[in-house]
Length: 551
Image 1 (cartoon, one colour):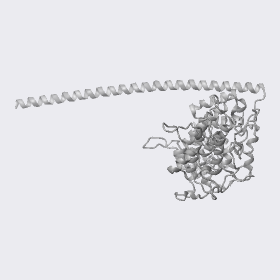
Image 2 (tube, rainbow, N blue to C red; image 1 turned 30 degrees about the horizontal axis):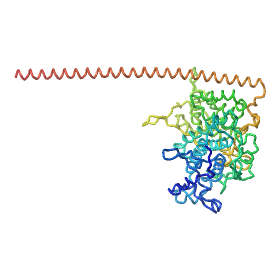
Image 3 (spheres, one colour; image 1 turned 180 degrees about the vertical axis):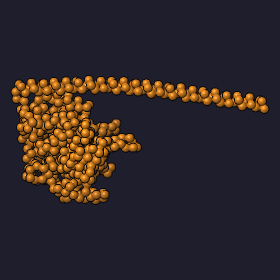
């Protein structure tokens, strides 16, 4: 299937939605105001996500947008929609509770439209091996992946997002990353292949502008964002006019591979990361030894070893890219809990002979710095949540016993979600002296970090701070040895998992048999009780009969 729709929204869908009153507020035009005077709904409406049904088919060329149009849709969402919740009042929301577009409305709109972008690629068989693959598909999916990763932390101050949307956001990010892996693993190496468009477009890689259109956005805390064509962040972007000159055509395989490792650290007890990195080491050693992948593996190792000090050191390091920190935010609650549990056992330990505790108290400000809390108030709240005593500005381990609070009704553990980490994570959005960058810049790779892309030859475009690319036979041998070790660890973990599974099944079988025995015994006891009751009743009746006869 080759899509032939040249608009962001097919005419058939646009007419149907107009007829049904299904034009969303963020799609309504404002000629001469928010939008140029000549704009119509054709310039603002974007194709909605829809599944195939018996009465509706998606695989019709006139309803499917080709890759160059899908790139243009990504650019439009970044330039005209993505910052609407931070650009002040919008008259289109005048009848709503707030005249400023709610962040979740903007999120839901982009979430829906990017799902359909990915769907249109699938409909045109962009699946890597056995199908199509080129740099346009890779760039679109990378931009979508960056947006999902960014939202995971940027919207964490909104309770509704944390409770209802975060899990959905991670699921969509996971699907996007799996598709990117298919593209990167393409046997013909087409992930960096640029395909000439049939029509000459007036934009670079779907980008019509280098800045957010409309008012310059202001962050939720009131700080102004950099929105200048001459800003320092523009020259650092991977996508746009600079991406056209890049040997990798604006794609960033090392960045995305590392992001996938961070995203799947909990899968199969960490075994998925071991398998993935082992295969990457053998098949793509240049990517395996890139800075982003090595950084992600360092995070994985620190989490696996419960090394909370190293985990948070990496998190607050200026060398850790913003998007990596956003995904690490997923694990902050778990690592803080591990840290407090370990510290309560270690610092609260008593001397064998004297009975005096080691490190009787610990400064609260040190805990704030160690575990990257926003302030002492958040650290104090966490200590109280886990039953750790805090007096004035000191944590008292002698009077503390770590425990997790349970919901008395549901009998589940009450979680303590971390606050938005402005001091540790959001500060990474500052590029140069121009202030914090916009979401547009994030999606186009301005804060992707050093070593995010590969050169044409496969070497790192930027020198790694952790390790150098493979250039000798010794390095290749080391890569193979590391891959074999990862494979052995994966095999051992699989054996341990199977053994544990068998033990669990055996224990479950024994528990079930014990329950059946107890039920049978209970039935026998109940039957015996009823039999005795019947005998007693019969005996009383017989005694009454004899008594009446004597009378």
